[in-house]
Length: 431
Image 1: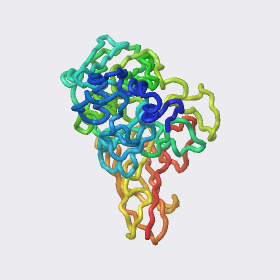
Image 2: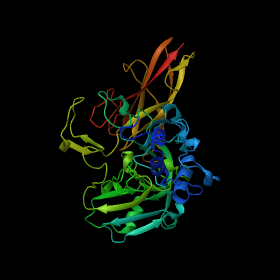
Image 3: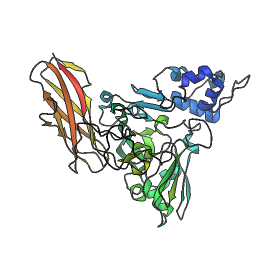
Image 4: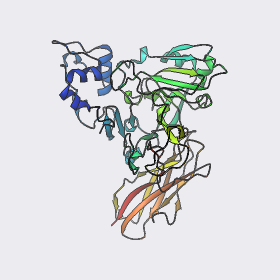
């Protein structure tokens, strides 16, 4: 379901206003004889969406959606994701499909805020670095490769609203359950190297990130999202201007051909389809940077309580969290023990321990926890869990970070439905 009821789903829009659907999705206008009209940017966009070149694209009639897109809940190049919304496209990954040590590209969640760019040609892509810098730059992907050291890192990306579906009372926004998180390997250049080469001026305070996606309304003037981070965070050497995901060009739905990766902070800071980084002398005020967007009250509040906008603060590092990826919930077994494993991560520091409970939190057992492969990667854990007799059990997982902070049992409610890091639970039936 769309977060905004005025925004129609793709298939509904094609039924009710096919001309407008063509324009919004592919940037094309309908002509009496439109044979051969779909080309250049529109063709690139359609090819990116279906996941391959379209040899007979000249024969596609107006108002036709490729069948790969028409099927509800199917995203080309993605496997098993649950679609929450298709305008903008938002899809999460069921926990049991996140079992890999490094998240496969086809299992990486999708979080869009607007409409995908029409032209995704990497050979023509350009990135501007400007604002309060001594040496403004415009760089293509080959410039980035040639001028700066290329690095590869496993980095967690998580939507700040991951877990919003479990808030009571409900809050607005995409109703993510557990799967708006992933840890792929990203390849690119350090954002800090590029910013240093531009000569950041002493009065610099904040970055502003801009992408090539457009507002859902289709108007050229509106940006769907433009966020930024303080200069100190921007200079963290783990931030990447990335052009590859798991050794291949970034999937278009995940921001290819070029995107930011700002690990440890909400995924919304990691601008997709990156075209510009501006250096500013104040906190950025782009779309979804002001009001209560990606902000939390500066005090604990009661569920449903109304809070003055002045009491909200920008979300920075993400909280400690863990996820059970095997077995899937509602697992049935005739064995007396089950191998349980998953991941744990945090936005600041590292995870020191993961503990499991099968008796609703009365007692806890330690899991074996791996070190992260690099900073800001998730840590893999495992444990052999024994069950005393037949019956219904819940396996709970609780991570504790290097600051001594553990996951809570209950959700800390807030109006935006952000930062739910309550313990993950699965059901197990022993027969």
